[in-house]
Amino acid sequence: MSDRHHRSTLLDLSGQKPLAAGRKQSVYDHPEIAGLLVKILTDGPERRRLFPRYSEYRYGSYRPWHREASEYLSVLNRGNAEIERLSRFYGFVPTTSGPGLVVEKLTGPDGRLAPTLREQVRATPKGSRQRDLLRAEVEDLLADLSRARIIVGDLHAGNIVRAAERDNRLVIVDGLGERTLLPLTQISNTAYRAAHERRRRNLMRTIERAKHHIVDSSAGLVPA
Ligand SMILES: Nc1ncnc2c1ncn2[C@@H]1O[C@H](COP(=O)(O)OP(=O)(O)O)[C@@H](O)[C@H]1O
Ligand SMILES: [Mg+2]
Image (tube, rainbow, N blue to C red; front, side, top):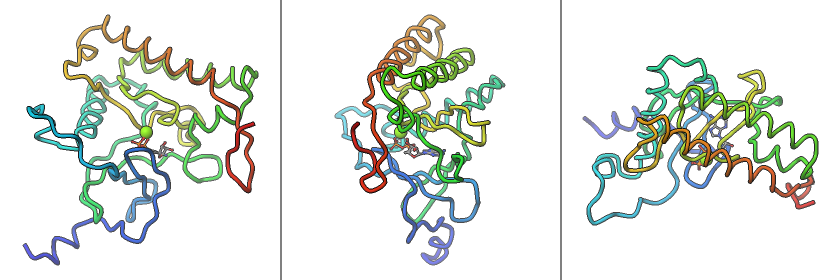
């Protein structure tokens, strides 16, 4: 296969600026299909163990993507309506910036990228009624996840957004799947409930304690 042919099969992300970036991934508009996003891994290669796990050997730095895809497929297999609480997963694609993960683009009221729960919490004063309402919405989200036994190993407010595509309800966009070597939570109801409760408590605590930021148009978010 010629190099020219190979390049033409890559999704071209060159010259595009990311719409958002977390600690590990950057998020781009899909250059060919409206309404989809492409995620690119931005952190360096994972540390190498002397005896790498099989999945490390097989997927390298992309192991988290395999975990997410596996959890998503497991939810599909069970046929749970609660899959609505997850951004849709469209698979993997080669890009000019390396392997890409294609997902549904969730948006906010302005048509831009959906606001994160973290941003929304910070826009409310501690102990306020608005913040209590947000917490009630998070409890509702977590109840749905639990009912469908959906595992979100990396559950935090930066991985949750409010999506116009879901009647403005909260949706998980990252962190799907179990991160431990022996994923007991996939097998045992008791282990699932224990892990879910631990993650729920941590998330609710950070929401309760988050500092209020006043949105200042010149400087972005500043502490109140
Ligand atoms: N499907 C999506 N729809 C809308 N925004 C998203 C979506 N996925 C990610 N984002 C935005 O991009 C940010 C970073 O993406 P994320 O997948 O959480 O990467 P990281 O692994 O770096 O945390 C998120 O905090 C969110 O604001
Ligand atoms: Mg994230």
